[in-house]
Image (cartoon, rainbow, N blue to C red; front, side, top):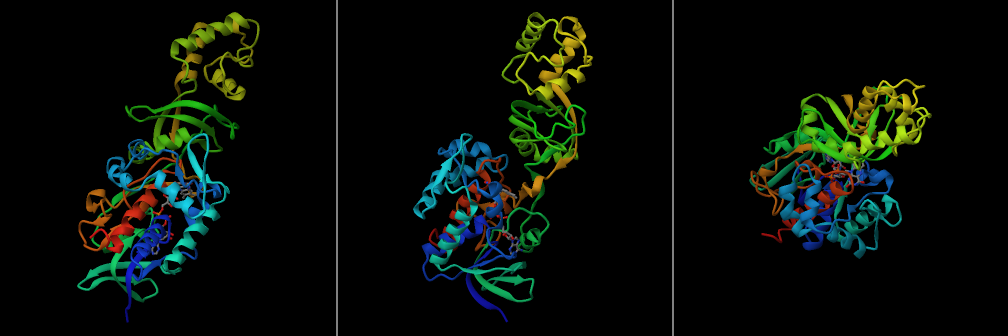
Length: 412
Ligand SMILES: Cc1cc2nc3c(=O)[nH]c(=O)nc-3n(C[C@H](O)[C@H](O)[C@H](O)COP(=O)(O)OP(=O)(O)OC[C@H]3O[C@@H](n4cnc5c(N)ncnc54)[C@H](O)[C@@H]3O)c2cc1C
């Protein structure tokens, strides 16, 4: 026997909760039910940003904001003109959650605690009268003559006039089946925002070492490049510069099975001629010192030692003894170190999915399906994803906000 429900939201994450709150606030009296398969709502918000929740990014111009999305950049333009970073900041501030900006632009609650954000959303949902049902995995849904029939794994069903799918990135937890049961296709999901697996003597034993500025590119993939800090891990390389590269190259790197050559410029502020000059100055200024222990550029000491060794410079070689081919090889290590990447590392599950419901199947002015009337999508379930820095949650807030209007019927 099916129980009746006005609007049903599948997924109690950032997008689903934001949409439910918006719909319920816009249409008092409308029954809005969130079905969440997990024990708790907003689990990802809770662990996001290392438990501090990087809510959004301090980028107030929507035309600039779209540049941080490898997938969905063009389509987000219109969506951000309706609800963007400033609106997120204002929304939370109006409910007592003030955000602060870190030097790199990431915005966190002043409490540095994601519980503040989760608590705010739960309170807003309660105030708006949103009905929450946890531990309710949805198995499938279909359009019927009187709306939607939403089938729960437990064997019961709900009837909905309108349905929002906000089930997050497709990670093999039943999200795909629900989307397909409704007649939508899926752009094959692959991970974005991952670290690179590299087994190389230049990096072994250096875990924890960080280089604040690098330029990175993938050999043979002309326009695949990024820049930023790099962190050596136990398995290879990570850090913002690497994550950025993984995001822009998510699909191409998946296609080559994550086996490729990474080229690192460890001194991007210095042109090649500047490095030649620095090496000449090393020879001039410290002729009797060993090259391996007396660096001539600003790099972490242990990394310098490894690059010197990789250039074939013997440990006892002094600057004055440095041979021409060794100087050339050292310059190459500094400006274009080549590393064989053999796989990816999904660090603590901290990745997003590239892929999902194709954007041309959705009318993004309302987040409504072009295939099934009354069906809406928001959040990571769509083929939209951003870089690290608060951009993915921003896309979830934006999509949720717009879908909430569609669910409430105020945009009809
Ligand atoms: C560890 C980690 C840290 C992150 N940190 C940040 C950050 O600081 N800033 C940032 O911008 N982004 C961050 N992200 C990315 C960001 O959290 C996500 O992009 C965002 O949460 C997506 O929101 P969503 O509502 O679309 O999906 P989700 O938050 O994944 O929510 C989807 C919900 O749907 C539920 N669900 C799925 N299938 C079903 C079903 N069949 N039936 C019922 N319920 C279902 C899931 O249990 C889940 O609760 C992080 C991601 C991870 C993994």
